[in-house]
Image (cartoon, rainbow, N blue to C red):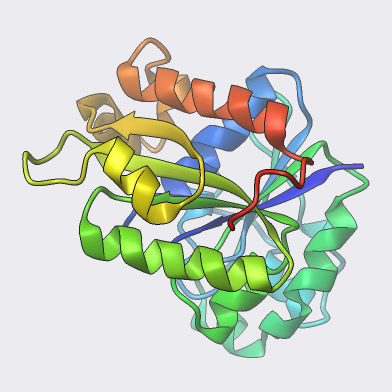
Length: 245
C-alpha cells in the first residue's frame, strides 16, 4: 500500500511546493512510484514547477464530479513520477468541492508507493482538507521564529486529528545571520529535524528554469539536501513512532 504524505506549513512562502516537487522526483530517482498532487486549490503552482501547464483534466474537475481521479493523473518528464495537477481557472475553483479531497486522494494509495500532497498554508478549510488527505505529514518552515511557531501549531492540530508527524524541513537556511539555528528550531518544534535545505542559488535558478533542482543541478548543495530528505522519508514513512508529543 502506498504512503500518503501531506506537505504542510503555518505560513505561505516557506517552500512547500519546492519541497513537494523535489521530494517527489528524488523518491522517483530511488525507484519508487510517486504521484505528486497539487492540492492547493486556489494557487496551483505545482503544475508549473513540474512542467505540466496544459492539463485538460485537473483535480478541480474531479472535485466537481466531472472526472475520476484516474483521468487527472499525468506522467511527468521525471522517472517514475506522475502528477495530479490543479487548475488556475477561477471558474474551476468555484465548482470544486474541497471537502471531497481526502476521499479522492486516498484512491491513489493503491496505485503508487508515495503520494506527496502539496497543501495550502495555515489552518483554513481548504488547507485542512488537503492536509487531512494524507496519513503522515512533513512540515516545512523557514528559520524565522514566527514561521517556526506557526508551523509548530499546524503540526499540533494535525497530530490531534490523527496524522503522524514525520518531522520537519528547515528551508532556506543560512540566508540571514539573525535566523534561528537548526538545533533551536528543533527544540521549538519538538519533532525530528529531517533536513536542512541551504539557501542555494541553484534552487533559485532551477525555479526560474521551471525544473526542480534535483534534476536541474543534482550536484548542488540544495539538491543533495533534498536527496538526503528523500532517503530519510523512505526509511521512516509508515512508522507511527515519529509523531509529535
